[in-house]
Image 1: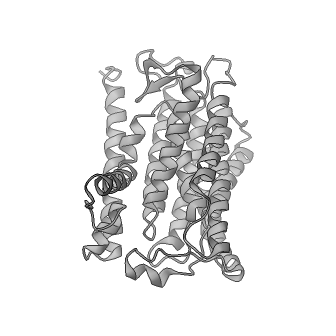
Image 2: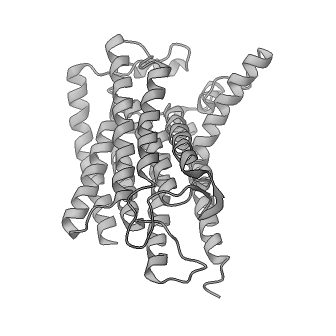
Amino acid sequence: MKSVLIAASVALVFAIIGTPQAIRLFRRRGYGQEIREDGPQSHLTKRGTPTMGGAVIILATLAGYGVAHLATMRGLTASGLLVLMVMTGLGIVGFADDYIKIRRQRNLGLSARTKFVGQLAVALAFGLLAVRFRNPSGYLPGSTELSWVRDLNFSVGTIGFPILAWLMISAASNAVNLTDGLDGLAAGTSAMVFGAFVIISFWQFGNSCSDGAAAASCYVARDPLDVAIVAAAAMGSCFGFLWWNASPARIFMGDTGSLAIGGTLAAMAIVTRTELLLIVLGGLFVMETVSVILQVGSFKLTGKRVFNMAPIHHHFELAGWPETTVIIRFWIIGGLAVALGLGLFYAEFLSHGTLG
């Protein structure tokens, strides 16, 4: 627990102190956000707000993880490093996207094909490496079986696993990217989901099969404590960044942050064997993504739109809700989804009757 607290605290302080430095640096270099002309007109006042703040989230997470290991003299693990590899790799893809937007002074960065290739490369690297590095107990960072709270005895095979990893990482990174449209919405929601993974992975650590826990209720995650450290650092960095990203935002995370955060959540779900549970924990991200799918599908099939604008948070803005009202109510939805996900996780544990 000490290492988890250190990681969260260091990342939080790093982000709170480091974000104003990033704001000044990006302002000097003219790294300002471009705003869609067809979006809510109130957003036009945000043009020029520094972006690429996700770089601070990534650096704060790495700092929190590193200091926690130095302070406790714990060794690095394959699971923790693989999750951080996904965060850093997708952060680089997002940074390139943000930088091109700034240089070209428009709200379009990397081409869809180039971004797809970047996400594919990072996800496949993770998928191929996650089924290596077996520990002394015989556990791997990833599993070729689809999981809910544990493996479901439904194998996707060694060829299918990298594809599954790509689908999850790509979907999650794009979902957070779609949610990142209002001040603090993505950062606040992501902090809550990372907090859920702190609880899940630490619970798995306390009930690990390798520690002789009851066979019916133990977990076979390879490095649950180290994943808890990564999740705590990511949670702390999101909260620290949110201090400056809350409405009215002084900096945006950009694709640098949203792609990195989404990919990290997917990677955590894979290494903690909670792949399908992520759909519940990230319920707000799912809702935002589904709204876009419905909007595009309806327009192509019928020529009519379901919402005033998608993602759905813009629908409520155009319906007259103040931005802060939308943000707070969507945070509530995100928090309820996290609570439901944690409840389902714990209910599954109790279903084995270990406390009876």
